[in-house]
Length: 418
Image (tube, rainbow, N blue to C red; front, side, top):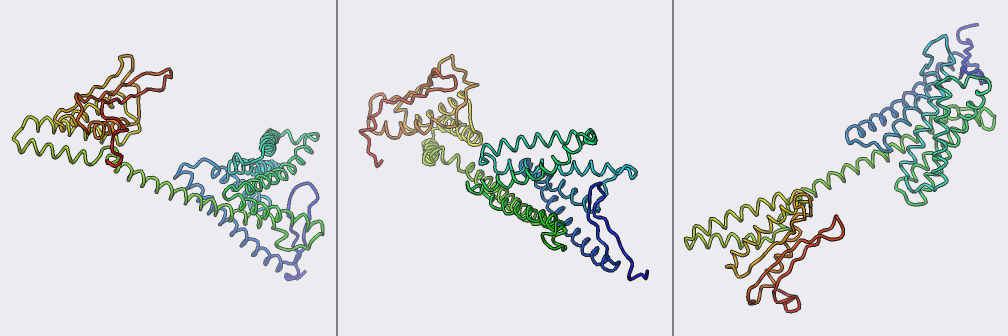
């Protein structure tokens, strides 16, 4: 025949069951191949773009949750479609073509396995109990099939029908479970679950187009031939976009929390020690210097500097030992005692059986109560003003009782506006 009338026979699959084939002219074949490879290039580019972004998220932010499962789901599904279209040859040994079927089964199993893990992790506790248990059984079912495939036991004539049809069942049940789980998440207002439902709907619809076309239910076209890939491409765009958006929001939230934490750390000291107290301490030091009382000024300055250092140390930790808390209170109360011309006395009691080095409490927890007792309890003249802070053990091993007792005028006799 003439060149423009050459007949090209293209077999779409090299498996040993009934398959369709098309007879086209060389010109029609070339045009279709250009469109086909352009589409495959677009699909590959978008897929690997989002795979690269997921890899960056995993290695940069150590996100080993549903992003990790989604990454492997993308990879296995992409490799499966490439093997189906003959773009990616899976024959490790050319003379041993059955290896392609083995790897195809593994790719299908991997795709379904990581899809179920992704959905289960994404929806989490909002999946109904019966669906959650069904997913666990299905995961076990997939593992059994993978074992039969890897060991080549599925080539036994008795086992092969089970493995072949179980693969079809796995695909249907996996996507049905994923769709139901995402739909339940949408009903329970789980964030982004409605996008999962929409993306799985597109994928399922696209996957159904080719069987419907082969069965002559609908006409054959480019969309029906590659409906599964088109549906998966739409799914990739939807899911990857929301995952990237969620990742960006998490990074922004993390940066915001870090900034707020820095601000809180800077204001921790001011919130724990009354600024008026610091001002009064400096005034007291100035007064000692003005009256030429060098010894008092020196003692006061040493205690004050030590108090500030202890407060700075306490402001950057979540807990301190009882020993450190006692040391801080001793310095604080000594300064208050000097500033008030020793008009009150104090004592800090810790029983000997309490391990002051291994018992930890929130830093500067007791100082505000002691400050309140001095400021309000000792406001009016009281003979022998005394403040007692006592640490007591309780029947609970992880609980320490702290009593702050003063002989001041009492809460009922203080002016609430002072």
